[in-house]
Length: 476
Ligand code: V55
Ligand code: FE
Image (cartoon, rainbow, N blue to C red; front, side, top):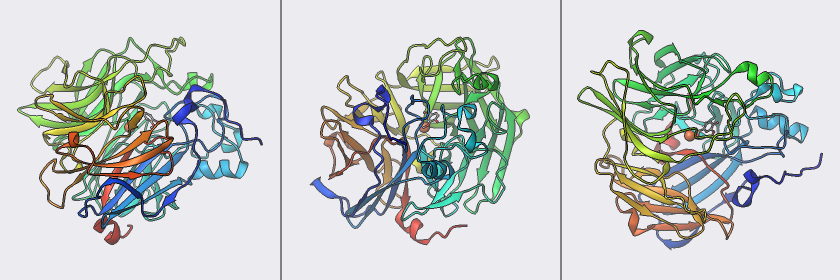
């Protein structure tokens, strides 16, 4: 079978499939010094393409997963990337071609892969219960070796997870290893079932709450506070009958509402508080917290459909729209199911993060990608969440950044006191760089900038795991 990638916009320039596994011992320093106090590994996941797509088209959220790791210790950095060799990857490697059709539409797959998981493991990586897990929201976690990224296997918490998948956006607490997670369309594609799980660092399920969504929504991300789990539902909806006719996995329904469920932790489906607003997309969450009988959610909000490649049921493609970091406030004393929404910053931004140790608490600062320019460049932003004051570091013309990662300056460092790790893409030179910034002064530019001899095509999300934890914590 000839390997010829189609000439489509999704594969142009920087986004040309890379398909290379890398191993760089001792990354080359371009400027500054790597702080000696950083000890740990930054894991990330992103999509690449193993073989030309079966049906000739592609969308950026699809593509077989490539896992990446930067091990940082004693001022030195090692980089490694490796395909996630899960079931999908292996059956395709065996066949020498793509066997899965449209994104998540199982009716468009090659008949030979009926019953084989189509999960691409391309979205996020976490460390839980002594295991390194690569995540995609339509599949169970896939465990890989923390040092080599070699495959270990699909992980269902010894059969304790009854849902068919787990989200790629759990909240993981580095200090005690608690995992707050969920599954949506949890009884299979198109089902309205959703379940919230609270799992301790031994893999014990402490809380499990099943309920129904208003429709078979995408639920890409959620947020947690000490008392609530916040679930956004938006009118990108799965219709099994449409899938059988070859439609996209989601269809955009502009006449439906956004619905938000506040699920009381330790409670039941009967305790859920519901809120509603006009159609829009609540995508990535920066954080949520509680204050005086209110729950605030800082999230990237699109006034329409965040994914214009998912048309309406009538096949109409609506225009894309930018995301603005916004504060959604749910007043528990109010009984009309409405919520308030206002922009925190006035320029578009996405991929928001904060100091992971304090998810669910009011944080002073958040970090995100901002200010995408026509030349393809972008900047890392540090936003003061109270004032909306925005500071930026821009790597330059024709250079873009991936989602930033906060790393505490040392164990027990104050909230927000630490470093930011950022992958930078030099779009014309066709390679990436690793930048390390002081999270409290990103405008000063990197304290260390390291050269990568390869392009990091795309990563969505990742996690920094403390080195001591990786060395001592045994699986299971
Ligand atoms: C998203 C990302 C996905 C996906 C579904 O950003 C939604 C939202 C990285 O993959 O499969
Ligand atoms: Fe995401």
